[in-house]
Length: 210
Image 1 (cartoon, one colour):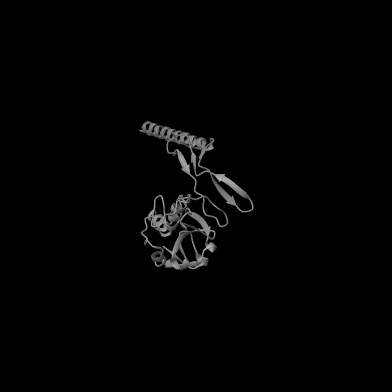
Image 2 (tube, rainbow, N blue to C red):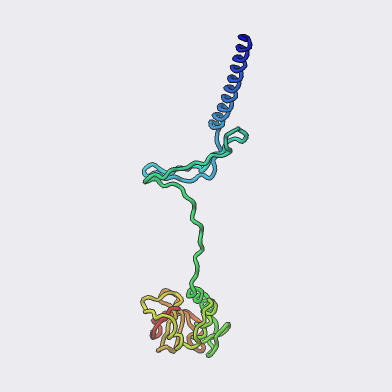
């Protein structure tokens, strides 16, 4: 009986020793993996005021095949007052053009086209025909005559004009589109092509924003 008890104790001691050796091997492997040179991924800057800017990876790649050890470890940088930490980049958004901007682009593309009374494009224009055609390219319907165009949209003062505003002259008998820098694009008169001219070159009658 005593002999059997001793044998059981010996076997228990051997099993305990084997488990200790196995655990030590895994621990050593894990420690070795952490001490190996790590592959960094997607380094991003962290700025410390008065110190400088440093590249910090967002994760560390570890060797594969180690039991209980993931192949990569994320690095979390806590928010610290006064220190800029990297964040997700904002998505790029292309600027959207307004209907007025599109109308100006259309009108400017016709600079040099001939003036023909009653014409509304696409190859020849009178003054209100150019304004109507240009806004049609932006998907906006406008009245046909310059007098009706002066009565549409929202009134705008001469010192608050924006590109695309309809500018009227000669009491409403002539219209063009404001392009910025104190100038309008218009189809002026017979014998003159579509052109850009200063607002001050004609008597201002009012302006409208669509």
